[in-house]
Image (cartoon, rainbow, N blue to C red; front, side, top):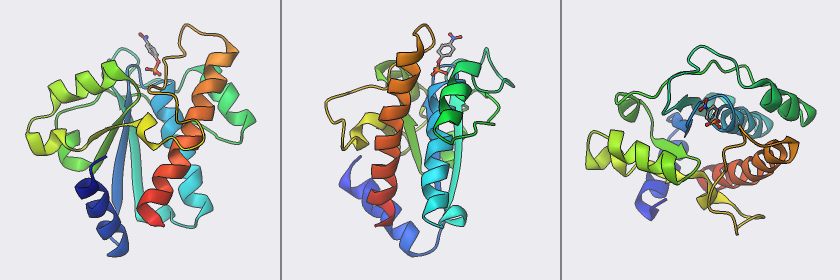
Length: 172
Ligand code: 4NP
């Protein structure tokens, strides 16, 4: 995230304007709905529920309307996160509606850059792993869809680290 973008988010937060964040992955049934649910928990725990608006979406629309993958929901609920988002495909107009558009891996970032209508919109695209603090040596949140339990746990470890740090950067 550029200094300019971070500063604009901090200013919005300080001025009491809602910060709007969209999390994006491929299917919007594993990583991005988990990111949304975990970030919402972080925000709620800080009493900042009304200061943020979160959503998530997928570059592939084949799961539109579905709840998150059952395996993702099972692993998430064990850590206290109830994932109830319904999958949807990202649209160009999402760039108008969100301040920050966060992708999980290289393919997501490439797809988002292709979709961004303007350079200004493209500047809203950031990578989830840029926010890692405790696990800084990872550069993507890998797709767990064809992985076992460890894949889902790894996604949750990365997302917990990145969302806490994202919140701190904006609101602290
Ligand atoms: P996600 O995982 O991008 O983290 O939601 C995936 C889920 C489904 C598919 C790919 C990735 N799929 O191709 O169906």
